[in-house]
Image (tube, rainbow, N blue to C red; front, side):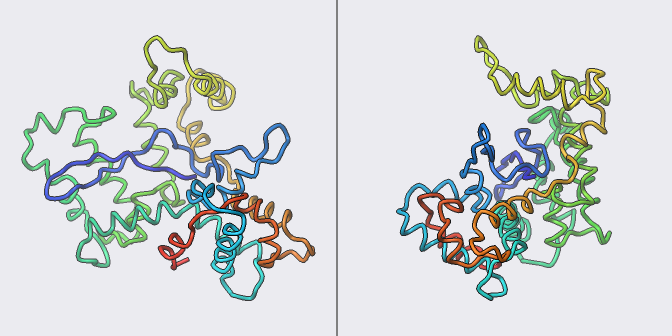
Amino acid sequence: MRFSYVVVCLTISLVTAIPKPNKTSRVKDEPLSSHKHYENEEHNADYDHEAFLGDEAKTFDQLSPEESKERLGKIVDKIDRDMDGKITKEELKSWIQYTQRRYILEDVDRQWKAHNPNNKDSITWEEYKKMVYGFMDDMEPSELENNAEEGFSYKDMIRRDQRRWGIADTNADHALDKEEFTNFLHPEDAPHMKEIVVVETMEDIDKDKNGYISLEEYIGDMYRGIKDEDEPDWVRNEREQFQNYRDKNKDGHMDTDEVKQWIIPPDFDHSEAEAKHLLQESDADGDGQLTKDEIISKYDLFVGSQATDFGEALNRHDEF
């Protein structure tokens, strides 16, 4: 599942970011694409394009089929990690996982550099706190208690961040290395951080602080309503999802266990399923692996009838 964070920008000596969950994407391990894989039992290749290319799929409408094939060939060379001329299901799966995590890696790199200008091996909590919350030193106590965005005061934000920091600090040295910092910024992707994701979700949505999430709180987290406009179809669908699936015991609200099942659903490996699907669709000789020719001959499955200027992205991500 892919979580992002709402950024609260504060200009002091530089712009810093206070991470908060983005309410539009709370569910961990979401599908690999915003498109449905099948529409009325018809295969939708747009799903495969987004799964295979991630955000780069958005620019795939610019090039001719010839250019698409050329650039796809360069991608295949990147996927073939052992350079044996064959793409295995595991190599394909690794690539799909990489494209899905690319935005996380870029975000971590950007914030690591901002908070660690001297490129040290780790960042202490005090260093991070000073960088992000240093502006609070000049604020009156009453201002610190005033509610900020989404009903959280600045003091609440520090408390939440420090709690999450402590969980991310797996070696308890009071500092985060880059891997731990990644888990701090994106806890939804770290198994040992799952519980704090649930706790923070409850804190975000449970406005009356009774320990449960009502239907009104659930919808209010996604949609504020527009005066004199009918409720969109997707909101009505979310109401049905809450009543039919989220509230499993039908008591009118979601408890902590139900919230956990919602945002951290039972394991289903979307990347594994997509790699298997692409392999089955493209493996012309049935040997369980793909050659570059097999992939390019099915380029419409992988990248559509057009492709993108993926070379720049590949140059930016030589670490794959």
